[in-house]
Amino acid sequence: MKTKSGFIVLGLALFICVAGAKAPSPVPAGPMTLDLDPTPGDQGRREIRGVKPGATVTVEIAALRGAKGATGFTATLTFDTTQVAYEGFEAGPLIPEIQTLPLLKGGRLEIGGGQFGAGGGAAQDAGSLGILMFRTTPRFKTRTALTLTRARYRRRGETQSFEAHAEVVLSAGPPQPSRSK
Image 1 (cartoon, rainbow, N blue to C red):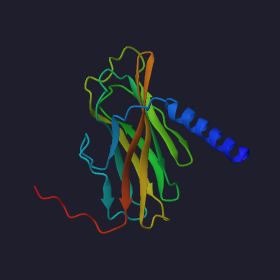
Image 2: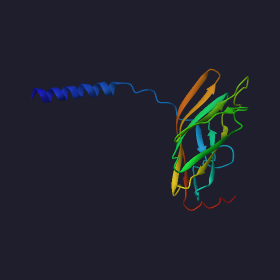
Image 3: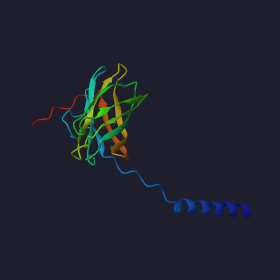
Image 4: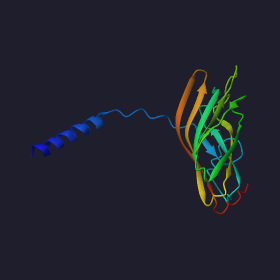
C-alpha cells in the first residue's frame, strides 16, 4: 500500500511541477506567406490544379506585414524532392538592391538575402519579396505541398524570427475554372 500511495504522491508532484511551469514564449505568427498567383502581392491562391510532370510552377514569397525598414529576409521552405525540384529565385521589388543566396539541402530550402551598403531597406510593410521557380519531376503524380516553415526579417544589427505555417499545394486534379471578371 505504501508503494502505491508513493507513486500517487510522486505523480501529483510531477503534475503540479509541469502544470506550474511556464511554457516558453511562442514565436509570433509569421508575416510572410506563399502565393501561386503571379500578380505581385498576396492574392490568396494556395492551390493550383492541372499540374503535370515537367511543369514549371512559380511561387511568390509575399510579405504581409512588418517589412518596412527590413534590409534583408530569409524564408525556409520544405518540399518533397521526389515531386518537385528547385529551379531558381528572382528577388522582388520590396527590398531594393537585395543580393540573394539560396541554401538547398535535400527537401529544405533557405532563400533570402540582404542589402549591402547604405540601402534604406523596404519602404513598405507588405509586398513581393520574390518569386521561386520549381519544376515538377517525372515522378509527380497526384499532389504535393510546398511549406513555409520559418521567416526572418533583418534590420541593421537585428534579426526578427517568426514561425510560419503557410502552404501551397500543387495538384494533378482537374484545372480550376477560369475566373470571370
